[in-house]
Image (cartoon, rainbow, N blue to C red; front, top):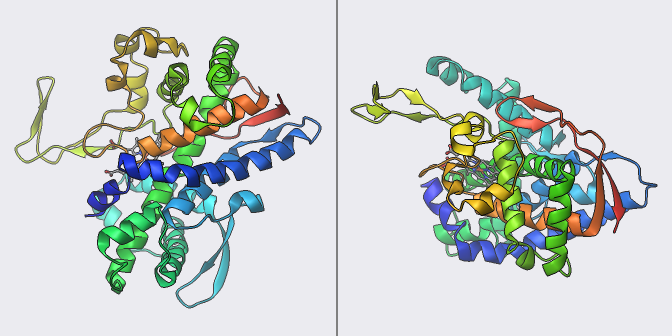
Length: 368
Ligand code: HEM
């Protein structure tokens, strides 16, 4: 049910309606980055700012309003507990905590998984509840206001007919679960991918110069409309997502009733199988020279997309990939066109858990 209704909110026409909202938030991000240009060219960690940006874009679409991290320059949010007390939490840490919890749970026996999900005092469970409470207060505010707005929450409200009748408690819970799933799935995947893509571009001068020349040729401002039609930019994004897949492990699938034969090998029903994204994206049979960051390969061979495992594959592939690509195209082109970007470290330090994330992304900006 959840995915059926949510997928409707990610149709091509729906995504087009979201673009002005996304651009507005990118405008706030741009103003904050402008501030770093005037701070005597000091290096700063751009990663938290990508996190604020991705959170603000996603909360604007899925909660119906921006959490406002960019304006505050902080991820601290006020959450109203069920007993009406107010607490301050770091929302990005909550997502990290929840992700870590999910990664550990994924490795243990299903019986232990069941037990762990019934223990509200575990840090991962507390983080999940806090994020749900945060989503719930925004969803309720929107339902009570009766505001109509072309965002993801608006599409879900219309699809459920909540513009015509009041939802029951269980339905509010479901709506909240949808909003929070999207926030979790779509925020730090996008922000970490942004850091990886820009790091790869900036540490490969040949790609940087070529991409910049092509963007300047067609773009007169911070225009997504023009940037999306620059094939070398799309090739660069694909190549960066291939060489550094944020979701490096492949989420598992269960072998169907009757079992499954893969490459001549039989797996009995219920066997958990997964295709590791990092390994596939670095397979020399598929890519020839997989360790080289070479966007040109995507223009030389139009069939490569079928092998890219950045967003998963099949009916349970990432529902937000087109939204993510709109965000990434807009942000990367805006930053390259507006600033000279210098990265401090040629090697991007990363940490591996459920995701393969950069630890920081230290850059210096100067106006062009
Ligand atoms: C660069 C950014 C992103 C990356 C790398 C990414 C990657 C992924 C991957 C690898 C999966 C698992 C797919 C599979 O198992 O086959 C997934 C699932 C999912 N993603 Fe994304 N994602 C990104 C952005 C987003 C955004 C922006 C949203 C929503 C606003 C989103 C929503 C989801 C949802 C709801 C699922 C679960 C789909 C299901 O279970 O059927 N993702 N994503």
